[in-house]
Image (cartoon, rainbow, N blue to C red; front, side, top):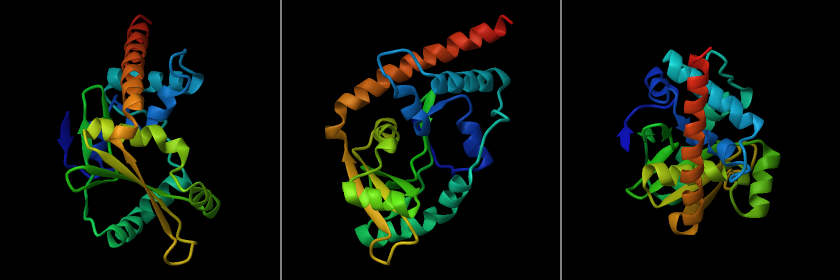
Length: 206
């Protein structure tokens, strides 16, 4: 594993991720783990196979309104997190682990990472009601801990529409609670990379 001190969403960052299975998509490849890969995973495998063959990013990348809003509001959420935890958040960079990698939204001390989500009011309320993180980001957080070799990940739910004092919710995931998930992720990730390599060979025979 090699850590690159680069900013997210820059050209250097995009090149570093080229053809790699990234933590934001770990949930896609782990779905139905133990069974065959679903249609979404198959599409992702094809995308990565083509990126590796062409040595360039897919031209069909989609950026949604919510993704843009999240990038814009992330610094505010991090400021609130720092004020509440009295911890300094440093650049998450990119953890290059060979055929896969990870870009946490920030590094905290020597043991922690953070995953920041700028969400709409109903999602933020749901996070408060469950007193935990949004389960759809479970595997991304597991990936942060696994790829970085750190001990915990703080999920930060942020909504600007909530009153001051309740705009962020923080939930910490610890390594010792997810050891089985880390093992399952590693096994599934290896199988998924084998699928990418198989598709790559198939394309080369066309």
